[in-house]
Length: 357
Ligand code: ZN
Ligand code: ZN
Image (tube, rainbow, N blue to C red; front, top):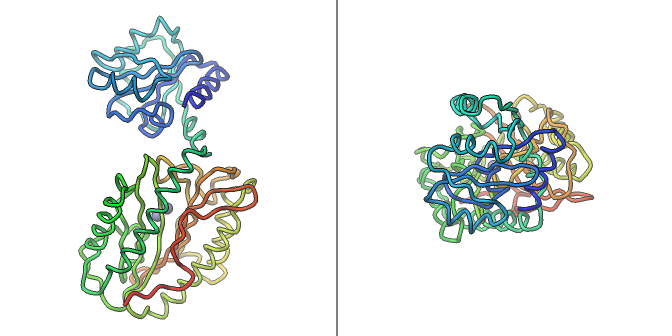
């Protein structure tokens, strides 16, 4: 973490900025290891601080030995004002996409004469490539999904609700050691499967329903993400047809992932397959996204993201086809980008449409 802080310090020096205030929770954790609810980092090229109040002083010292602990007695901004002289603060970078309007105004009021500079994506950019310890945590989190999927396939049957499936799956994985879910699970059955983000509802799953399960957990602070589409009883022929198109698209996407290619080229590889089959207009989201401390992070595998993939990035590949009112299919795996390809982190079966009977 010391190295990560030094990288941000170096970036600030390069840009001629005196300090950066880091408050976004995942960014803060990435640079500090601090897990308390209240705290902000003040990074400079030389010294870096974690500013927190009485309740978290001991915790901050323990979790962030590479940072100086600055005790906040009044408000964070008052503390920054008090530190201003010592650190020679004339320009202060902040996370423009995180700090709200009120906080921005308060910074302006309490730090008169200090130039406020939005610096978006600086920490997020570092977070894109995972180090070995991060990859180990992510692999653990992802492996839990394979266990969860195997378990839940034995639980699903006609007559139970989507919510029952979602809860059962969550409780199973929590018992197995997941510390939480990385997002509210998507359990979308029958016609609801056409909702790309159909959170579990009280709909009762019936015979012949297609069922999309998109779920993820958090382990050691790292998220995981996987989707499988199954059917309960025999699938409607149209759903079976689009399942194999999505599968072909997903294989094409996975095959395209390797260091040195652009994120958008992976999106294109998957999208081309779906378009060639005439379903292009029914695939309205990007092909994937980075996964790490946040379940959705940079890079995005979309037509608009030209990030060049690097070894050590973790991304999802998740094409889908959604037919309004009829149903839909999505298949999602998470992978580590490698020099000449990628390595799957989620390994649940997908090569045939799984029929649960
Ligand atoms: Zn997902
Ligand atoms: Zn995803």
